[in-house]
Image (cartoon, rainbow, N blue to C red; front, side):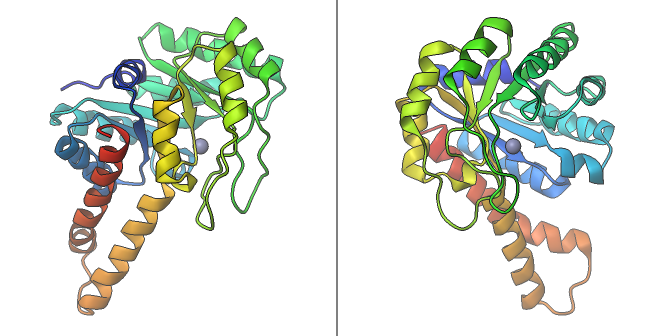
Length: 276
Ligand SMILES: [Zn+2]
């Protein structure tokens, strides 16, 4: 089927009190595994191309690849630009056929973040492309610190922008491998009193399974980005495939043999997020 928008998937997530998963993609084999996992779980799949992915492969190719995967998929697929930093980056993704773009103005002063977000919404709106924005900053386990989303920011953003999804910072952290995020449930509940937008948490791998369910059941978090735990799985599996067959050298053979393990984990994550 053709690509669908993020707005449509998040609305379906809302109806079932579930969580849609934004899969961080790095290439063909992992992207294909996520779509197969979605088909096995009967869940929509959000394929995300982040800054690292785009530094490695041009955004036009990501758009083509995601569209091709969607065409042959039996479940809805979203092609999502993750962490677009400028209007131009978002426009390039829209030109490349993405059905959803994230504009991350979270490091800018609030007024500039709002202005940039509105410029992207205007550009995306002409083509029916969804927009995700971010307020507060989601830091990195071994990098930039987080800045929690404040109630004032959420209120101003709700009044002055119209986006389809809003990423917030409430204890979640990117690239978390050491321990688990301490979600600030109080802050999350307060934010929900001032905005009706579907909420997004990045750094999903650091969030405990029970907390993921609670985010969906008791709150309005509708999208969780997951990357780290899947990349760890794929990396470990590739290592095993190579260890098991020292004569193996063919890239396609290596990745294809490692793919089923990645697909199984993605399917399990979808079952716990979308079908729980
Ligand atoms: Zn992120």
